[in-house]
Each structure stands twice: as structure tokens, then as C-alpha cells.
Amino acid sequence: MHILTTPVADALGENGDPVTIGEDNQACLAMAANPMSSCKTKHVDIRYHLVRDYVRRGEVALEYVPTEDMAADGFTKALTGEAFTKFRVALGVREVGRTEE
Image 1 (cartoon, rainbow, N blue to C red):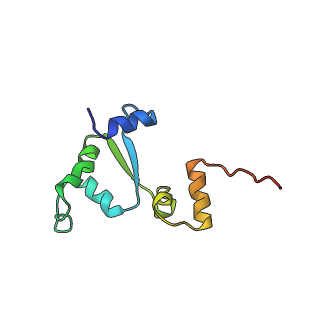
Image 2: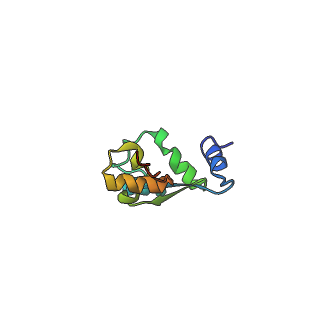
Image 3: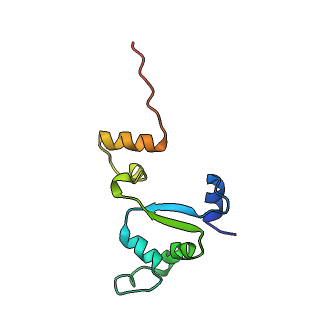
């Protein structure tokens, strides 16, 4: 039984396929891909290496997403009008027209 990936995969209808996680931090992607530790990564607590294990087992796939295309930022950051519209479109939320009073 997989703690993280099985419920997520089932919810997404991706049974058996790796769950893809978009990441804009290239250092994070490099750490997940490289099992070696260095002086720059030794401060990372061992419990955070869980993603690396999932990647190694093929249960999670990480892919680079440029910061300007990171849809999740809409949940965590203040957005300009243009960025909010892009976020809304990425979520599939449509604008409903106003009625005249």
C-alpha cells in the first residue's frame, strides 16, 4: 500500500501511472534525481527524502515547470489581475457574465 501515491492516483484516475508533480525549483529537482549527498544538502532532514524514494520507485515523476506557469502559486501568492486570470483559466473556472440592473 502506498501512503501518498495510491489515493492521489485513484482520485486522478491514473491507476498504475506515476503521479506527476510540477516543480519550479531546479535545485529540488536535482536533489530528487541524485541520491548522493553533498555539503549543500546535508542539512536536509532525512524525512524529506521521501519524494526521492517515490521517484526512484517510479511512483512519482517530477517535471520542471517555469515559475510563470506554476498554477499552484495562485493558492499561495497574491496575484496581479493578469496572473489571476491565467490562474483561473488553468483551473478551468469560467467567468460568468454580469446581468444589467
